[in-house]
Length: 250
Image (tube, rainbow, N blue to C red; front, side, top):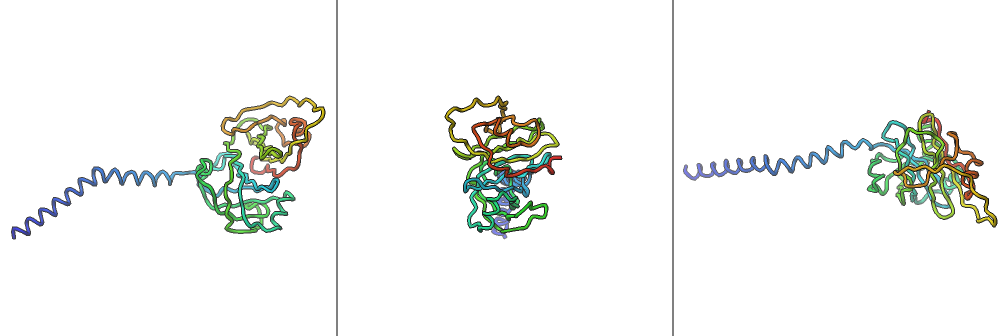
């Protein structure tokens, strides 16, 4: 009987010690785990972040489709790698047909922080939310470089980011402003040096510290035209309008 009492006392003592450990260090550990899960659960940037896909000089570029007042209220352009695209799809991009991506849900915060390096997506001919036709599913999109990342603002329209792709090509991207606004992407190429270069027109250069790319006032608030672009930036030649969206910004 004495041995049984000793065993019971030892077990009881062990239980008390375990409870004390849980209330002290053990509870702190549990709290840290719960905090991490809560933090991840409160990433409100997670969602289906549709993109338009364009092609310039054999390189693919994806532009996030932004929306005011939502988790999508960011302009993001990045160079991407996509393997094994069929010729018909390449021809659609070469002829500036509308091509969009419907990715799997991911965190836009992680993409902007450089923590998301690839994702799966379905390719669409046309707008994926407006009757576009799915072309290929489960495509791996790899982020090669992030070229423009900035939040939407409520200022005036008519300013354009000059996103240089390489020494010969650039994108002029409208800085989406207050409604009504528009999303416009223009492909321009650098002109050959002139024997007698004409002095450039005076264009207003603005600053967007978040974007870290040149920003120019090129229109009076409306969409950019060829003459506005080439007069405002005479060193560059208009090649094509790659994307224009007005419906989402009325």
